Amino acid sequence: MSDLKTRPNDASVEAFIDAVDHPRRREDARVLLDLMRRVTGEEPVMWGPSIVGFGSYHYRYASGQEADWPIAGFSPRKQNLSIYIMPGFEAKEALLSRLGKHKTGKSCLYVNKLADVDMDVLEALVSESVKEMRRRYPG
Image (tube, rainbow, N blue to C red; front, side):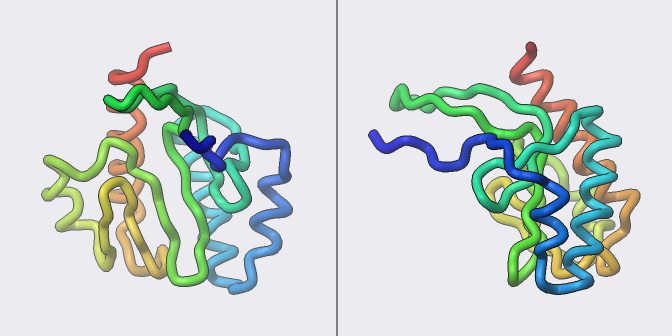
């Protein structure tokens, strides 16, 4: 089995955000940094070269492979902001319907810019996600 490449490291979160090319995406990353720090009560850590993560949990696949991953996180990608909602979006239709312009993947919320979404709804999504992950993976 190959090793997971996305691991926490000592790279500077601030330097990573400062290096984001697009000014709006860079500012949105700073807003997400503050939001997730407040919601999680955790300090940000770089995971791999491009994910800002908060907290962590340990999981095991049915195959037996194990890994750690942030409880919450985001990445200011070239195409959009990727916001990690780790338990996914099942039973989140009511919040998502009020969020604003977005797309979803299995555990990723994709937003072009934070101005497109209701920040209170986004904070509620992140908060519910963090609570659920801490319930599923205590300690």
